[in-house]
Image (cartoon, rainbow, N blue to C red; front, side, top):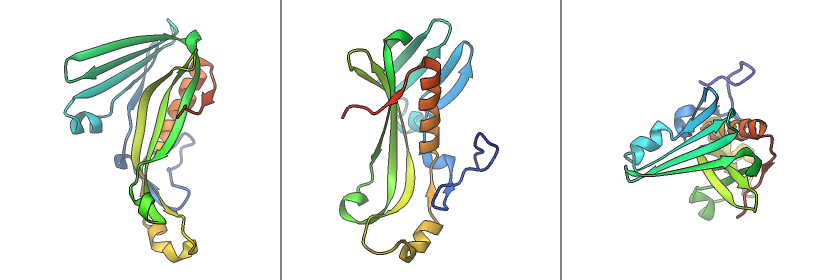
Length: 181
């Protein structure tokens, strides 16, 4: 079980337990002179290393360096100066196909974090994905689905993506904004 900033266990708002293994989030580490975020081991194994990304927030040079690797050998580097970043994009989408056909379903969450640059260009950085919570969009009351709510397990993608977006917002001194669709 993961412990939050206040030292308490993380519990979802609907009574289910947040479980780190149910989500595939980037690994975020503090390394002088800043923060390094890289593709999670889940995605590395799942994609056989075909697509990797590393983001370095360098506080000394005031740059965000994004390194992407595709097909094991195609490597791309981009540097973004802090002064050209207008905001941190933070968005949500439900990837569950059940939501199209049923009024009650488990969500499959995707929280995306990126950079909003001067001139309205957006640079996606990472997606935080994982098992979401049970949702009742139907006309029947929630208590009829007590077992779905009681045994609902969720990943940590929401809290970790929000913390990453807030961390980047504080380090770059820019607001968190919605991404353009």
